[in-house]
Length: 234
Ligand SMILES: Nc1nc2c(ncn2[C@@H]2O[C@H](COP(=O)(O)OP(=O)(O)OP(=O)(O)O)[C@@H](O)[C@H]2O)c(=O)[nH]1
Picture (tube, protein in one colour):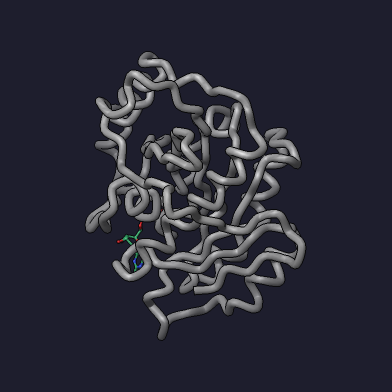
């Protein structure tokens, strides 16, 4: 699928044969400190943010995802050039009613942003500038890497967003563009490549260590989810 970077753009995906993409468990690496990077995944409801992050962190396609309420956290530890990197992925809610109380949390101390649209939904693509605008309003600095992902490429007959149109928008903002499918098992490595591209970029540019969200924050999110869930009609 398309991976288009502008000439000279410092955003190539380069893999070393020694790089390990082992899925971390809570017990893995607990004795070794990893650098932790917070990545938020943003876009309209139903574009496949949960399925994409699940594909990357869980290696499978999540068959019956529920609408995300607030945020879901997933993480995966990678070993790149001998260094352990933990990607802490914030799968955000696309529906306004499930995200409004959380927006400040999404953007705080973020290291990278992934904007997702659905290639079979022109409206989800047309929303991307609004998501970019929201990101800017929350003071996400210009050096924070951003990428754009068109998901659901397996639905070829229903494609509404042409690659050239998406590329135009990506070029306007100077973002790399990826088109992929969380569903198609043949795209699994491509989904990995999207996150790896970011991981390499972060590894080489960001020395900061991010604290894990505290247990109380996570409890707050889960409590909120439990309170809101019964009203969800999705
Ligand atoms: N055909 C196809 N369907 C997909 C793909 N990714 C996700 N879906 C489907 O799209 C629907 C929405 O997926 P989610 O991952 O829940 O979407 P989301 O963006 O997280 O939605 P919110 O949580 O409401 O923001 C589900 O029915 C998925 O099965 C894909 O790559 N191909």
